Length: 108
Ligand code: 2BA
Image 1 (cartoon, protein in one colour):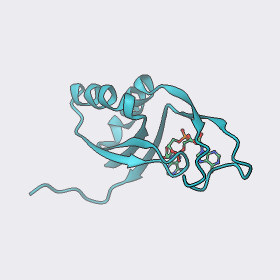
Image 2 (tube, rainbow, N blue to C red; image 1 turned 45 degrees about the horizontal axis):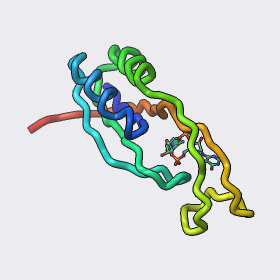
Image 3 (tube, rainbow, N blue to C red; image 1 turned 120 degrees about the vertical axis):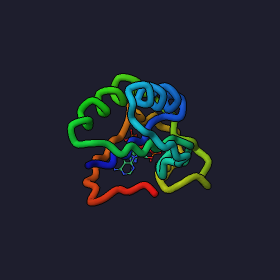
Image 4 (tube, rainbow, N blue to C red; image 1 turned 180 degrees about the vertical axis):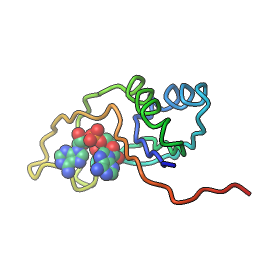
């Protein structure tokens, strides 16, 4: 069994989660924040059989868009600011996906 952690844009999270759910997968949505841009994103937790991992990754990839974001100039935000405070653009996503091995899963 695997645990898939997928970090997706907030704007894509509803469609990604509902497409996964429609395919019969069980999804938990966490509200998270990226450490660089310091803006909200969504982390999806999906416990799945090894044989389903490829299909899940395909669905996440299909519904996660790549976006350009401007890093804010406010010097109080995070540690990713350029030293001279100039704005710069970063490409975010579509999705960042980790696949972890699971030793055991039980429901009580
Ligand atoms: P953030 O940390 O807010 O990062 C947003 C985007 O800023 C990243 O997009 C990347 O293009 C850029 N970026 C991040 N850290 C950077 C750095 N130290 N120097 C220069 N540019 C940097 P993505 O790579 O698509 O990541 C989107 C979000 O996914 C991240 O939000 C973070 O929440 C998560 N993430 C991505 N890779 C991760 C990793 N290896 N471990 C944990 N979380 C990760």
